[in-house]
Amino acid sequence: MREMVSVVVPCRNEENYIALCLDSLLANDYPHKELLVVDGMSTDQTRSVVNQYVSRHDNVVLFDNPAGITAAALNTGIRQAAGTYIMVAGAHASFPPHYISTLLKYLRESEAVGVGGSMVTRANGGTIGHSIARVLSNKVGVGNSLFRLGAGEPLSVDTVPFGIYHRRVFERVGGYDERLVRNQDIEFSRRVTRQMGPLYLVPRVTCCYYFKGKYGLLGRSNLRNGLWNVLVAGITRRLSAVSPRHFVPLLGILLILTSAFLGWWVHEAFWMLLAALGAGYLTLVLLTAIRINNRRTSMAAILWAFIVLHFSYGLGSLLGVLGLPWLYLKRFISPSP
Image (tube, rainbow, N blue to C red):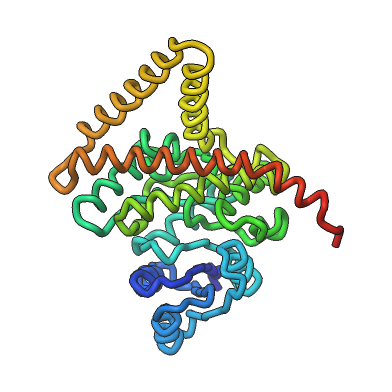
């Protein structure tokens, strides 16, 4: 009998995307799989949609996640999984028919302890949505996040989206840290690579991630990502729990604030430094916008998407740094369990 793959799908209020996700997973050509949907007590029609799949497919099961955070949902699904291999999926994504079988083949034949494919961002919302999607798939927007940029050959990476792992990985390193509201996947990946071995990006498979194309959502999402990027390091007490590339927007914010402070209080020459930093940044994003602009995007929308992405993430990281003293003080004054 072929080994089963358990696919864990955390979700909450995903009525517009969950059917697309489940259809793509059910259509995958690897037959021995179960889909474990873990819902964070949705208030829309998500549960109704999932229950329709449960009634029609014996290998689709719905579980509750009262905690409402992704880490708890993933751990619930992993505990219930019957498969030899465990795949982490996302309700906002769809997967090509060969996704599971291709990754599983590479996982079995390589030194990797976990593998994932590339991810292409798709967005709704017309010109703005397509412009945001282009920014989220560009190196100036997301740094060296290779799973968003793609690769020509299998590469060792610091994290993979929607990866497949042998269940012994979770038995050895543990599950996802439920203290982390966000960025729990990055912390888990760093733990895996430190304790067990490499994660590999397999370029022959590409999934689609759907983003609601609005600047407000982009800003709020990346503000939280930046905040939790710092809090992950503080909560786990390991700077290695996050990747250095996640601190680049914070460094940019600190350079701006430092130059402005020194220009005001020390010497006006620092205003020139601030102007040079601003001009250099705008030149970089302008040249990039010219290069990636197409018929479905606009220069202005791309430029604003870069600015919202970078500054919201950097501001979130700064808020995380400012919140670290309170985090440690709270831990010091809280009674021991």
